[in-house]
Length: 306
Image 1 (cartoon, rainbow, N blue to C red):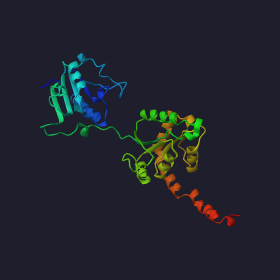
Image 2 (tube, helix red, strand yellow):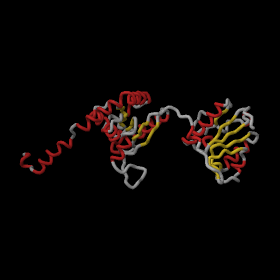
Image 3 (cartoon, helix red, strand yellow):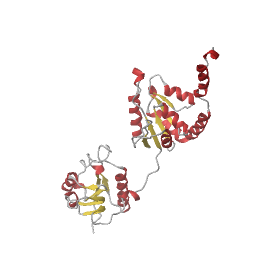
Image 4 (cartoon, rainbow, N blue to C red):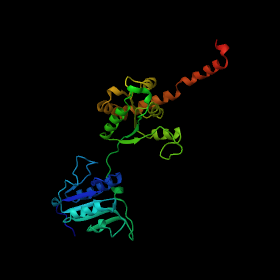
């Protein structure tokens, strides 16, 4: 039986510069770390600098510091894993929760032990992500942005607004969901009808948007929007926020993380109730279409209008 003495390096595709960090892989990592913590095994996790720049990189990890290497989740294949075996040749190497495509691949045979989730000739096992510990739920924030609207010319700040909003989201504890208001019945990745889009919006906690319809459709379903007007000096987003009596509005010239943080906190606390009441009022209020019948009457009977 392998001694639990010595330090362990935990790796996966999330450790490789050309790899990727998927939610499933990182949850599987959490499950392995949970087991190591429970058994008092000291360990480090190697991260790709593209995903976690401040973490320990695989390149910076010194092989002589470790007695064991664990590779978590994903398929076992390719030269990157073969290189891992070569570099950490003195370590006892274990793969856990992985897929074995070719059992003769050096990426597979280089491990002393493979606790596979699926492999030819073996009964599959459950993925490690199923039992991984879960952090507290994060608010779900719909992101409705545009980089178009060239009609505003030199007043456009759309690109800068989109950059600042997405940079802010990257540092905020939330689950961002990119929402596209453009409909396309032929593209299964987009909503095909307004009803489908409203169904998406009403499942969100907050919407952050620089689009007029991102603002009003969120209010229609009672979801608080953070509206950013991407036009310097204000334009239709500002006008519509005023028409709807909605306070969570940030002009492009005043957009910063402090204001975004403040409005996000407000939306998650009081904003939902306010948006619900505002949405009910707005859907029952009059709008310019109510006056259309008078214009149609005047157009049909110009003499009466005179």
